[in-house]
View (cartoon, rainbow, N blue to C red):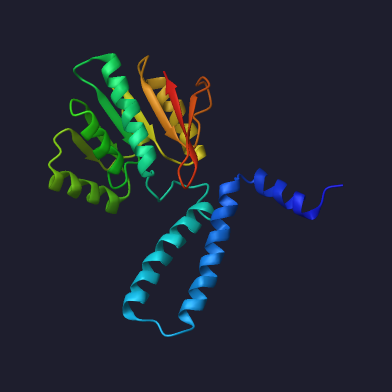
Length: 227
């Protein structure tokens, strides 16, 4: 006989929740209790600022793991994931040994990923596509301030972009959009092109990927494909 607890866990697992998600939700509710305790007494200006900052990030994490699970992530790829992706692209660049190496970041946000790749592979041309106006302008600002010459940004729908000359693609989108974009990439990318997705697989006609588990505070997976 299945217990109510086991039935609840089965439903949560079917909805896509992982063990780490339960931990995050537990931490979130624990933080709410901490906030209530802190605000019940006298709160200094410095403590208020610190609590506001912590609350902002806790709410962002909670939003990503609840209401935004099926939508495009609003949080950027983690530091260790970015570093690993840059290493994979650098190795691919060296293996192909070609003068015109093009990297595409679909949903480049503020440009953290593109800047790391551009720094790791100075000879590559990196393009970030971002539809949201604010992160797009932020990426343009950081590019100008930091003086990157091998990065370009476009405020464009990545489904409308011509991918035939791309050598490596980076994707951090929701599951459904990743699958749809995977179909486009399968049809357009040249043979040997590298595709790296964060958290969600391409599926469809793509072969089984190389899965790389990232043992970070928010454990996740990178999936590596070859066209």
